[in-house]
Amino acid sequence: VSVRLTLGVEDRASRPPRNHDRNAEDEFEQLRFGPDGLIPAIIQDANSGTVLCLGYMNRDTLSRTLEDGLVWFYSRSKGRPWLKGETSGNFLVVRAIGCDCDGDALLVWAKPLGPVCHTLTPSCFTGRLFYAGASGFGRGTLRSGTLTPSGTCGKPGEGEGDDGQKEPFPDGYWSVLTEVSRVINERRDALPRGSYVASMMRGGYNEILKKIGEEASEVVMAAKDVQADAKKGAGLRSVEPLNALASEVADLWFHTMILLSYAGLDVREVLEELYRRRRSKNDEAKTER
Image: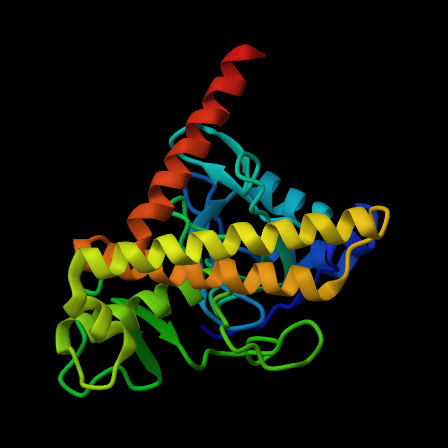
């Protein structure tokens, strides 16, 4: 994408909404909307450079995006403006907006406030690769069926977080689960000697379930320590018991992920089930209004 327009939009949390400036308005008039009044908008993570999703904007939703600092699309199926995250709360905070050399496509750099895809994955472009090429991916890397670009045109941040530090997992915390799941599946298939996961797989359901029971008990004990600490401190909590609880929950999650792998399930299936439950609750709330 050849970018010739950059419209800086501040984080909405740092300011009240305001009208976009005159320069943005002038550039706005140079854009080439399609016969249907729409223009495609590619959304890219402003920190990691990951392509997040593709949507369509018209003049109204582009104006709303500039004014609010949050991504607005035009829903072709519903025929109305649509604030990304209006139901899930996973908004896209705009950092900058650009267009291609012909002015008929937009590139939006944004900070995602949660999973972007309705399947609870960080990006909508996951798990569906139609062609990999004989020589691999060049500047991209394949992780669990997902192509994540390691370099993109003109993105701000170059993989840095808001504090300028390199992010260990650029796709956010959700990618930690998928990465751990990938490693567990590799150990399950290869059963390498000296691997803890492989030893658990060799032990089968009995060994895995026994360990999950132990880890669950340790979570309960750690939680009781947090409870006792809160009572002792008149509601003030120490860091150590909280850190211990987080560590024990991480152990429990890890061993349940081993169980999922052994049973032939993927962690994404659990995330999708959670999404379905949340969506169902949202639908119920709508009908009660």
